[in-house]
Length: 102
Image (cartoon, rainbow, N blue to C red; front, side):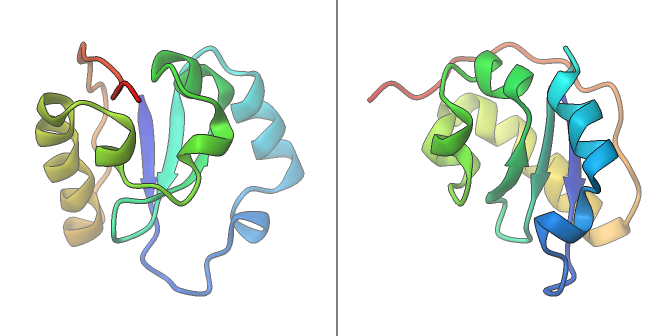
């Protein structure tokens, strides 16, 4: 999974992902997500949505904890927060978890 952290309030998804980037991320077999400072999904590509066992639409605007099991959130949330705090990317995070079941 790759994640992008956006701290600027003016950063809106249509401006963030140009047509080309969105097409690239949407077609990728690698999972990509973009979060706001509250760790809510602003964007998720179909590959990661499938890995999370929930449609893209269910992710948008929701927090990690609304989608993923607590153990997975405990691992991912500090990593994403560190990106907001430091501005440094975190790469190659591999984990196994389960989606929250309704």
